[in-house]
Length: 127
Image 1: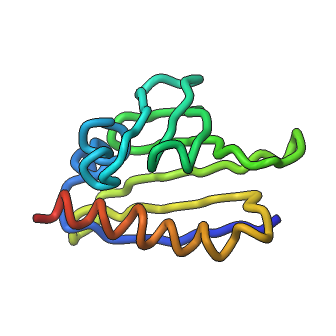
Image 2 (image 1 turned 30 degrees about the vertical axis):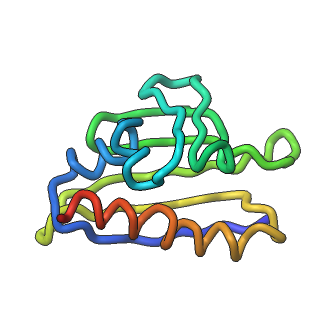
């Protein structure tokens, strides 16, 4: 199992970034696919027509999102995604942490975070 952590800067306010990661209407715009998302802990989510699925764990309005991503991980080794938003002099710093990524999926997951998540969100909210 591997972990990934990286910071990204968005030239906009934290509430816009937060809305882009929790509002299903906006998520459908940047994924260009069907999405299932609800800003309620314990609910299931799905991105990219079901290619990425999991469970929402925690929300802190305009500051934090925690999710469990479903892989075939053993109990106690859940794959957890934590996104924290911080005010930055340029706008918003997004702190992304993803733990317990299966070794065989690591490269695809890291690439997906940049090209399938960060870049598309940036295109939508920094227009």
